[in-house]
Image 1 (spheres, rainbow, N blue to C red):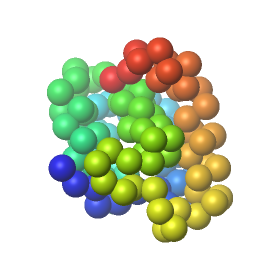
Image 2: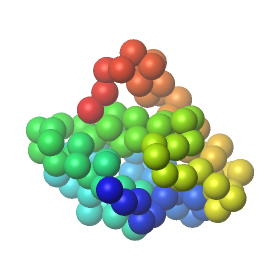
Image 3: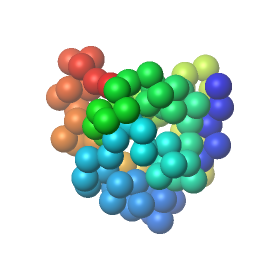
Length: 106
């Protein structure tokens, strides 16, 4: 599995915030996310769920795992992350945290 892009800059985090502002289907998400939040784990999950499902919960869960656990066998969270981008990503996560913490996502 690989990760080729993450919202480590203000520009990318803001783009992700804009994507997450409205429903995005699991089918459409990979194309919209590719250069902002490209991650095989995330894209595998999106491919496994109903194509018309709202993908935001799965996207938020993966972002949470990267920001909060800071590893999944690989280093995702490092000095490339700008503090402002981290804050935007945390803002994106806020509405999803109750669901994520109950492990009801995807």
